Image 1 (cartoon, rainbow, N blue to C red):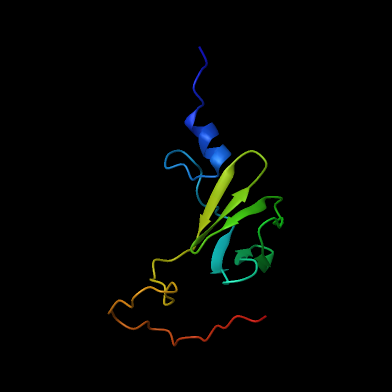
Image 2 (image 1 turned 90 degrees about the horizontal axis):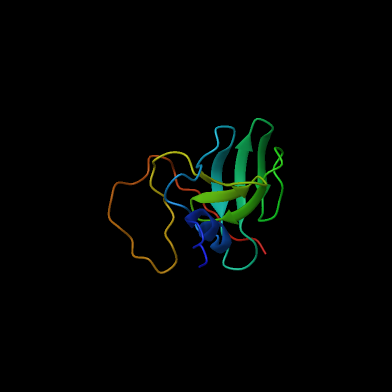
Amino acid sequence: MEKPLSTASLVLAFGLSSPDGQPTGRADLVLKACFIPSRGEARALVGSRDGDALYRVGDRLPDGSVVRRIEVRSITLWDGSVEQSVAMSGSRPSIFLTSGSAAVAGPAPADPPRLLREVQ
């Protein structure tokens, strides 16, 4: 009789996030922004002790880890043996809306809005 695969193996094989026990966060990195265009490659602005830099999926960070996924509020890194997730810091709500979503009434952000547009 074959032994069933472990949950960790399945999570790794399908690229899912494990709800338990998977290391999350990195004290040496700060995710400042994620740019996910409608066309083209997603990029993440990551701050480290070496300064801020933009990264794409597949790019190597100064510590040797590789950007595996870029999502709206987090990135996933692979350091050769384990996946780590770095979430955007702060508890402020996003001032941007997902395309097609309805606006939710609420207090205006304290910071003035900034215009971001896609450059092609």
